[in-house]
Image (cartoon, rainbow, N blue to C red; front, top):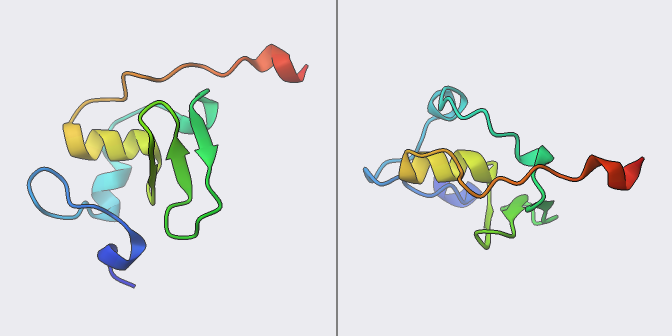
Length: 84
């Protein structure tokens, strides 16, 4: 399965990020701890971000970093007291 069929978009340079590039992006933002993160249950785009309004094959924080070179600025820690 190639990158296009997985839904991975090209970055600003016009090429697809390799898996190694995705892993070494340096972003420490954990989308699973973000209030805006959700699972889409769409096989092609399993992760979503409500703050930015998109679904992605990659974790949204990785997608933001690959396309902008910046860590996600909309990260909001989940309220963990809600489940206690």
